[in-house]
Length: 133
Image (cartoon, rainbow, N blue to C red; front, side, top):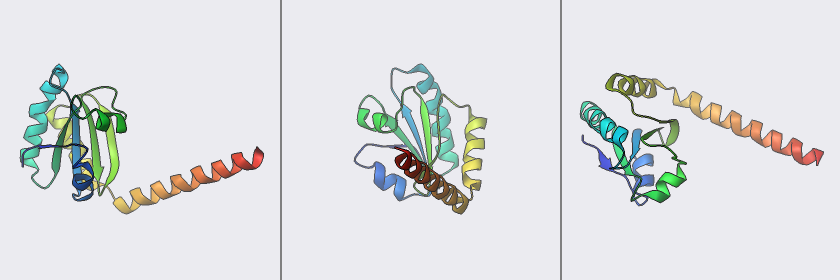
């Protein structure tokens, strides 16, 4: 499968409708982005079961802002609709392959449990701060 253009209009459908989604935030004028592009495209051909989306930060500025992208290229990875990785910088093919393998190996029940535990801890801290005020 080749890469797909991701826009504000199709983001939610793509992220929630697919098991694994990799988003490459890029711009045509960005040399590291242009170097990473063929690596990303090659990986998309090797993994037809994964969605490889490209977000043009020039035309999708609202999406870039929503994900707080301040440096490009930035790669953000979702698994079962949950963001599990985000990092600026171009990866070489082997690094991208290692990342894909790691994301595929994630125990999503454990990830969801960690998220719930974090939310509960944040809520307890907020309640404690309110009680002291």
